[in-house]
Amino acid sequence: MKFSTMKEFAVLLFAPGSVRCCSFRRDAKGVRLKAFAHCTHDETDPAKAWKQVLRETSYSRVCPLILSGALKGGTFFRCAGVRLAPKAMRGALEFELPQRLLQDTANFELEFVTRPEAAEGETIPVNVYAFPATDKERLAAMLTQSIGKADYFVYPLLALRESDGPVYLPGIESDFYFSEGGWHPVAELPPDWLSFWEKEMRGSFLLPEEPEFKLSEWLGCLLCARLAAAADVKHTFAGLNVLPRQLRPSRLRNQLRLTALLLVLLAVNFAWGLAGTLSGNHREYSRLTAARNRLRTEVMTSQRKLKTAEKELRELTRVINQSPGERDVIGKLARFSEVLPNNVMVTNLRWTDSSVDLTLRSEAESLNVPEMIRPLKFWKIEQIQQRRRNNDTTNTIMLKLVSSEERK
Image (cartoon, rainbow, N blue to C red; front, top):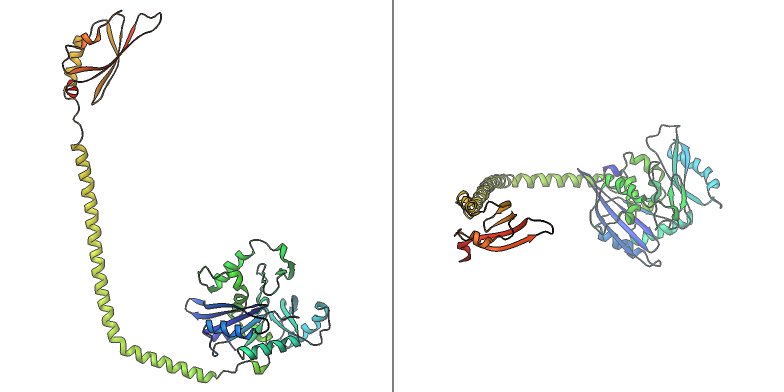
């Protein structure tokens, strides 16, 4: 099966007590996660849960399916090897098993993934998953009871690359995480390990932004999907043929291609019939869009003019409402200077719209300020305060005058 030629494919990941399924679709923008589903199940009858998640993701039998998960007696490791043909590589890895497994490997089967771009004879890392043949029988029984057939069984970590960061899959191995070619206790897992996979997977797939989609929970499915979407899929999957032939679907490719061709012709015929209607609708839409844009421009111009007029009106209102202030400042100061005795000096003067505040200083022992101000008919005394400091011959008078008209 060439996954690179398929528009859709699915990944079903089983774990103790739960099963997850992701459906992917290729389009012009890339590989999109079309649907995903999760279901818990009873260990005694997981087939029902497998059927449920496939139904929730709208799985069709014409769509390739990758079955993934960890088998009870399986072991994953990475070793160094050379680029060989798949059959020769499998034979070479069988000699590697006794060094990796602390048990009899006579009844063990294995699947492996190598780097496709390596040259023949070059030393390369090889991801290997070994498991007892009896586990495959149990997997075959589960497959037969639930979905019937699957294209491949892939252990999730087989998809790891040398450049990948640490990966932790609790449903596969709850006590350890894999990093830099070996297993490590989960207590040593870096706290920011998931940031690498967020960037990697969102760069490889078009993933949903929904809050319920947590990448850490779906990382196993995404790893298998990344392997399926690799450039050299044919070479990559050559080492993963572990399912019996009777459990792998045999699709009628020519019939599917003919069906696709007929559907395309039907779509072309339908499009040809609607071409006139669509063209008219497009012209009407363009006309209405142009009219809408023109009206929008006119409204924005009117709004700008209205805002400018409102601003000018506020300025004019502010100017009109301003108090004209005192009209005869020079004359009143002259009259005040006339009634001011020669021995009195004004040291401070502050003139506002409502009052005049003065500070006077005089060496006279007694100064009758009210009598001095009496000739000024336009002012009245609002407040007066006299102060003489000890051992000082100078009187300080603080005087506040208000307009006579305001006090009437």
